[in-house]
Length: 94
Ligand SMILES: [Zn+2]
Ligand SMILES: [Zn+2]
Image (cartoon, rainbow, N blue to C red; front, side, top):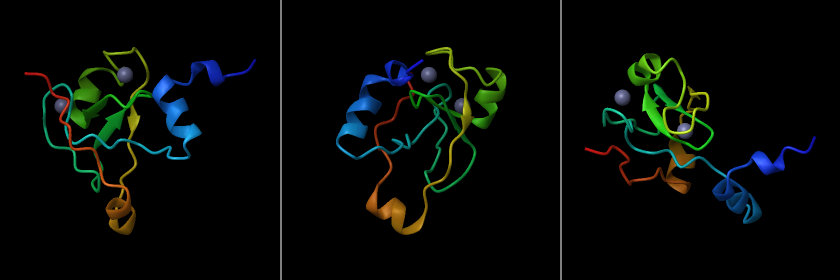
């Protein structure tokens, strides 16, 4: 079975332009705590919904937005972070 139909549209578009990379959102969508791109402790689903470790734990590592698995987000550091800056738009509502 071909799995490309499972790729979210924005990821597919990014891949087409050769710019596939994580958005590295700056905060936890649930509690609003800061999640710097160059530090660990952030968890993301396949759609890059982003949560802190405490929230991911509370949520049983299951994204409440899409139902997907929440996994450890890799950090982006040094020159790579300068070249590919983290997102700045905060996702916490409220
Ligand atoms: Zn949180
Ligand atoms: Zn999600």
